[in-house]
Length: 322
Image 1 (tube, helix red, strand yellow):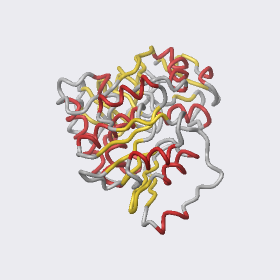
Image 2 (cartoon, rainbow, N blue to C red):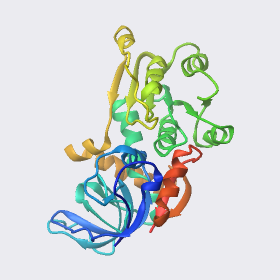
Image 3 (cartoon, helix red, strand yellow):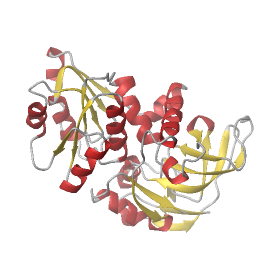
Image 4 (cartoon, rainbow, N blue to C red):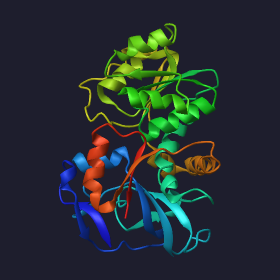
């Protein structure tokens, strides 16, 4: 098969488009012919400096396509069925193997490209808001990096649940577009100091829940935005800069909490999160939630696609097509 690979981590230009061995389908796994690859934030971070499972390395968490082989022990999926999959790597290729627990049938009528963008973004957003953030109708939520895949999913899910939604992004065009998806207050983080802007927008109270995938100094600012008994969920480090020290001293006096979140662990240790993702796929198929695809690149253009994401000009997901 052909794949976008690299031999060492670094900038987007480390990618090479080469022939590599086909993956092998084992018991409890399916082999799919990849038709759409959603580039996740973790994909760019892994390319920049993550561990290589082998050389050449095929990066990538998430992709969708059609099953071409079903391993022993699976009786509810068949060859020819469309599915979306997640895994620790291997999405940036023409073929991909995934375990049954990390694979979802694509509902009828849902385009494969849209399905490819659902599990990580909507699963992470849903759990951050409701399972770990305990968001309820009438509460206020702040979504950091709201123009990204998880951010746009969180905005829609929070608005759908009856919350008041504050969101951060940069650039007037992207901020204006956020209102289409349920944002009540859009904040340009490049122009204002975040915590005072949030306090002003909430009458001095702060927000009940923060969904933060940026990390570093932004995570520290997120903590300063919390209301009494507020909950901050940290799920990523898209900002690529770790804070030297995260000051959590203010949490105790205000009965606030900071939780870390990783969808992969929830999928590995139980079935609940798998059902959450399935319900999100159904909601997208019904038109109740929306996938936003910023742009599509050919698989051999993986370097260009990663560079586009890192330019911070994308609104929604960037997709690769073999």
